Length: 246
Ligand SMILES: [Fe+2]
Image 1 (cartoon, rainbow, N blue to C red):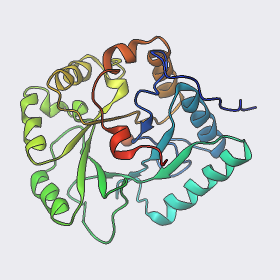
Image 2 (cartoon, rainbow, N blue to C red; image 1 turned 180 degrees about the vertical axis):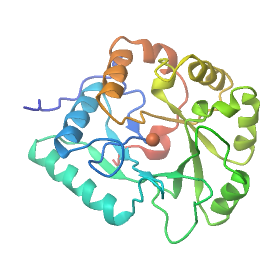
Image 3 (cartoon, protein in one colour; image 1 turned 45 degrees about the vertical axis):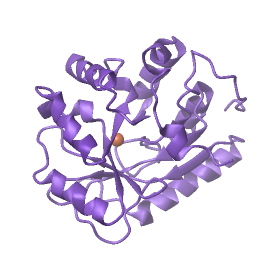
Image 4 (cartoon, protein in one colour; image 1 turned 90 degrees about the horizontal axis):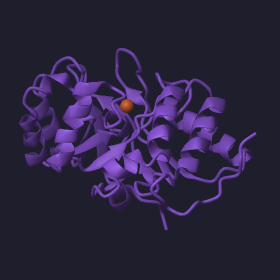
């Protein structure tokens, strides 16, 4: 049922210019993303056809809702790897996590990271986490590089987006959700994303893909060439920092 992926040449109607997705919820059954392995394989197959060469899966780690650990994430990744192999789909796939940094967040043990100890964090959409700068500093002291997920989605920054600059001054990387520029999350988020793009404050981008509505919206902006037109020449570091192993 799955077409064997054939690498297409990079073009304005695919997303090979980004190549690596560093933020998604493609692992089945462990957060609010993909529900089953079949669903995961369907999404991944379509993402490969859009031009992704590598996927780093980042399930939520959020104590109250999704208390994931390596013990839940690693088996989910293995299920997907086995199913990809059974379906004859070849893509580099690995896992990290998206940590909710709220009052309950604790730095203990080895945190689940993207390569080179890059840790993806998020906050509530309602309020800035108290002492967020101290938490980031504490992570950095322990050798982690911090990536803040979708800064454009934090409504409390919309009235003064220059505040995001302080994260850059601290050495934090900012990650754009691709669907923000498509207006998927509303006009205000789109406007914020456009400001951050114009200000060249983003470092990396991701799909934050949870379900088929995200995939349809993404496919439509990619295949129409709209996403390339908006972002194709933006100097995202996805490949440079997290590229496919040669
Ligand atoms: Fe996410």
